[in-house]
Image (cartoon, rainbow over all chains, first blue to last red):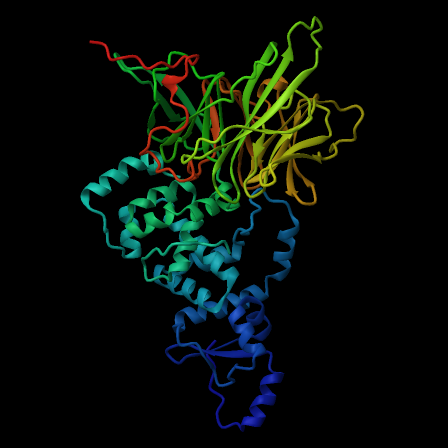
Length: 186
Length: 407
């Protein structure tokens, strides 16, 4: 996915070339370059759509300083996979499902896509999706994280999210009493 | 995206992202995570968050649980306890340890509760005919409200009052009760004497015990209980009789009744007789179950409320013919991903579970319940404050009495 930097082109030439290109080049915080379909980027990310429309895409690599290379690779990978799965998405929306909800369940490939990610990669990806305004990817990654959280105890959650327990002993005991049935497994 | 308020912390995730993740969790898990830290508790206590979560169809799609209840009076006790248990027999929660929630009632109860139903996560236990105990089993919050006072402008030979529907208001989140009284005038020899129906609405608000207000509606007296539907501003009820083609709906924002058409029969009408129609919810959507004389049930889902568009789910479940009216409105579905696993009929005392193998079980004192973190009353701390509304012990006609401690 990484591409060579195009160097030495005249500014004028570059602009013409960019208008003709059907991909955009994105640059991660650690300087790696990734190429992604312009159409998919504009459709899936409100931020990238705005940059493309506003002409602030840099052919030498649009700087995304907030996103590391691993997360950006996943973003690009998701965009490419999504572009190839449009027929399946259309099919699903017309069928009847008992789970129909404002949030559509992840499709099989989306599930696999997030399932293979490590914990850290998933958290980085959810941040990247949020930063880039990628609503669907944000949905899918949030869904995955909430699935991970369901069976966990408050202690385990503090560990996973690196949260300090700021309750006093007495407060915690009081809350535990309130929780009553909440410790059932789902 | 649903609006998420409050600023939780943790994991290095942006606060709004973390809020969205918590927002997706089922009510029980959200409630459990109050023990994580203060900021998570603050988020899950925010009325805006609770209101949004209650109307989040994703969260509402969780399978119902089955609650069984009983009343316990300890020796020399001055108050009774309502004991609630998650009924494992019919639910998907097989193999759980037995856990009982003890809800202290404000007085001594010597009579068994008559009616039990669950709306928007709040269990309503009716001590007919005067009082209703409202409990959120998940959070332990409870309150007691009295039924509307009977009007004695003329004597009646027949009076029946019940909670026809209840809901958490879509805008304010405040829990509301819709009460129905049907009366037949005395002195009429004719059994078919006209029955008058009166609907009254009460806002269950800890701050002010608001009175019951009349809601005008001209409908058949046999109007059944109503079913709330998460995310929509209405309660709905199968309308008159079993062949009725209209659904009675109550707009919870405008607080008025209306109607909408029921779906056409799947099978060509004529030789197929509908013996039972009832409504419930499925994945947060209004669902119509239509029992046919041949012993099958059609399952319909209201896909688009504004357009009144019903979708045939393609699910036709074989079913023993159930005695119709006694179960009306008390139906729960246990749905797997693409099919209905079980249909459960409850009338508060008996329960019948139908599954694909046509087995059924019976139980006692069971209500179908979908968990919610909705609070009742709206701004009342859960579990802490015992009662609001009319104190049980001051109600002269109610069988619950507060007696002085024995010596």
